[in-house]
Length: 143
Image (cartoon, rainbow, N blue to C red; front, side):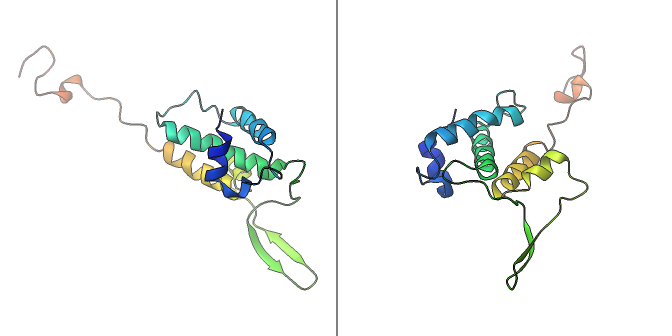
């Protein structure tokens, strides 16, 4: 569970308790486990776990909205805009991204979460090799 006051400090866009009530924030934070299982993690950074939950909560709040701050119809990165007779274009998701990463690309908070997930998923470490390479003796105690 996230600390709502800390969430509001980290993400000032959600600081207004009228537009983003505590119940709505907690509801979206509860939904984050359906998308990313932060508890069953492959890394040990508690700060990263909290940040992942908070970023996904902010992402869901923008996409789903609240009763006082309804969601916008179109989402994504704006690629072009026209003022006279109003026209807005959104960048399409890259073909090499998966559906989840494309969905995260719909908000700035989702993009930050995607970057964090990419950083955490790079190289988990080297496994393999002979045990004698860890010390100066060979297997069996010989030099």
